[in-house]
Image (cartoon, rainbow, N blue to C red; front, side, top):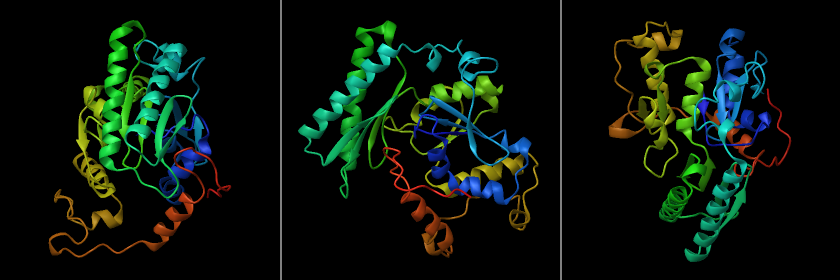
Length: 296
C-alpha cells in the first residue's frame, strides 16, 4: 500500500498521474488480478482509500455500507468516521491563519490553498520558499494546534503539519491513522506491518507512523527498492531474472551513483521524459489539470 499526503479526494485520475510510472510497470508485467486487488493507496494521509483494479486503474473503496472501510474501522477512535465536521473546520481555520501570518511576518513569496481536509502553503509561480521558513511555519502551526487541543480536548482531531520540501501542509489526519486503518481493514497485525518513509523528523509526515508499526527511514527510491528486494529474498520469494543474476546472499545496498568512485548509473532518458511530461499535465499543489492526460 502507498500512504501519501497527496489528497485529491476521489479524483482517481490525479493519483494515477502521480503513480503513472508504477501503474505502467504493473501493466507491462501483466500483474494478475489477484495481485492488483492487493494494492491500495491512501490519499490525504488517511482520508481517501483507493484500490487497484484488474484494469490497472485506481478505484475508490466503498466508505459505507457492507464492507465499507469507514464502517469497518469506526471502532478506531481517530478514524475519519468519528470526526466532527465543525472540529475539522476549526483546525483548518487555525492552520490557515498561521499560514497567512507566516507569509506576512517572514515576507514569503508564497500563497496558501485550502482543500476539503488540508491547507497548504505553496510558492508563487517561479519562486522558492527557504527550507528554514517552511520549518518555522510548521513549528508555529504545530504549537497553535497543540494549544487549541488543550483548550478543546473533546474536539481534538489527529493532524499532520509538515514540511514537504518545497511547501508546507496541514492535513486533518495523519499516517498513524492511515496505517492503523489499513492494518484493521486488511487484517494485518503490527508485526506484519512495515512503514518505509523519508520524513521522520518532527516536521515530516512519516513521523506519526512510528507509533503504530516498525519503520525504516530511507533517503531515496533506490533504498526503497533495496529494502523490498531484501524482504523478498529473506522470505524466499524468487526474484526475476535480472535480480537473480546478482548474489542473492549479498544484502549490502548498492552505493549511490558516483559516490566513492563508483560507476554512475546510466540515465533512463525515457523515464525522465515521461516524468517531465507528467509534471506538465497537472499542478501537483492544487491538483488542477493543465491538460488532459493520456494514461496508458
